[in-house]
Image (cartoon, rainbow, N blue to C red; front, side, top):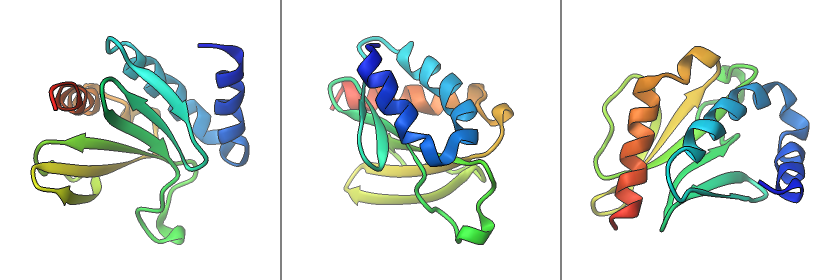
Length: 128
């Protein structure tokens, strides 16, 4: 990754510095999926192959008082509604495409279950 993009990522976390420790291992695992690229935007960091499959953001998926500190939201594009207590919000913006928001607040939540869902989102985006 080039220095400009790394600087953009650090700037993205400027007001949420503690959440960067959640983001770094997330980024490393998602970049391990072949052909993944990153785009830093104002409100999210987007991970794509042919299409977007995951985003990291500070989306408010709960009332502000109910959000842990630090937190990070991983949004996955899934082909089905993910049934798990770990899912904060899920919507079906298009038939057969589910946007699934997962609230992360601790490093141990970056586990194999989470990355198996990320791989499903990656495969779904690749084969659309």
